[in-house]
Image (cartoon, rainbow, N blue to C red; front, side, top):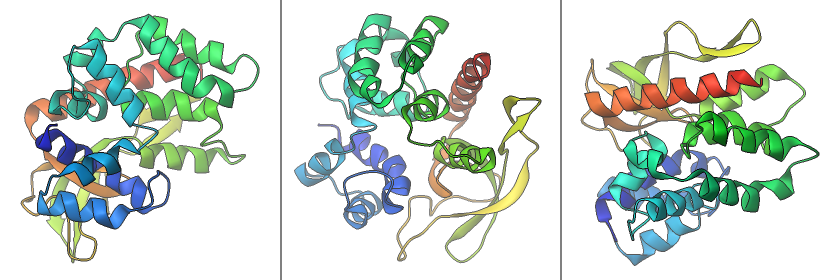
Length: 246
């Protein structure tokens, strides 16, 4: 098993887990593993229980002939986006979505979702946020503003560090907005995101000018130029797909 990949997976899995949105219910252990960069079988077992993300990792790994779902290439593909996503065949992607989500959907919703595969959807986390959650009944709300806010928090986004403040980062980030009935990224605005919990965090080296990834208002990692470019591209691609049927 890849220690690097498993620890990187934990950076992104921890933020919703600490809020109670993802099983397993042991976010403190996950935080301690990742912050201390400790790897053992316990971490792998803990992360295999993430029933939302782990099946995507298995799908991507199998499509690329990679034995370990926690290989860093696979983890990077799911959370950020890379060429491994292009190797996932439409039939395998369809079967995975059908098995997991068709029972949660009503009427023609699954057919609508499956149609996105033919539009070049990829098993990226932001596709899951923009298209799967909204039809699987996991993020629906009568108030559109709440749904939009939830989608914005759940997607993997990027933000530029402007300063630090007591376990938080002051950043500039483009929020997800609804304009003329379509999803888009709005003008950057300054806000604070969390960088520590109980004195533990993942971006201690972040400094003003750096770019960080953000998940549920938590700074996951410092992004290099390649990762930043790929995350932007994956997000733009899946926003465009979502807007075709919004």
